[in-house]
Image (cartoon, rainbow, N blue to C red; front, side, top):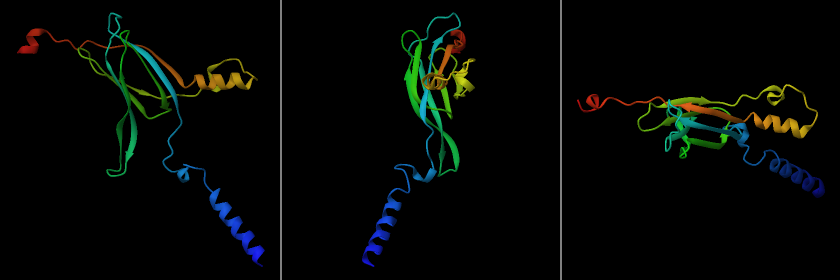
Amino acid sequence: MKKVFLAAATLIISLNIFAQFPGANGGKNQAPPAIGHIYGKLVDTTGKPVADASVVLLQNKFDSASKKNKQVLFKGGATKANGEFDFSDLPLFGITMKITAVGYRPYEEKISFQPKANGGSTAPSNNPAAQMANMMGNFDKDLGNIKLQSDAKPFSDAIG
């Protein structure tokens, strides 16, 4: 009888231990995978790079106190001297990019990664490594040259 009781107790304890993956949190509030990557270049209307512009990425989060979604800072940085910026380890959706620079109008763009069938390739591949590389390429997003519009005001408007 003791052996049966001991076996049953061991079985119940082992089932409780393996009932949930570590950090799974019962499927609640799980963050999407952070595998996105964006990059681009800021230029003015003449094509010259815009250095030291502020680029911030905001993520939508649910605020349990107000019961509303709000945007919170996820990542931020400044453009390089050549106007380039680069962010990796991004969630696949729910990101807004805001750009500000002295003398230019603010710029805003929603960022999302849309997986494509065959990774955007027109030819099907039977090679699993090639399929994985194509799929991961979907999460690399080149935003290209982003043109910032001048916000310059005539000197007479600025002082009067």
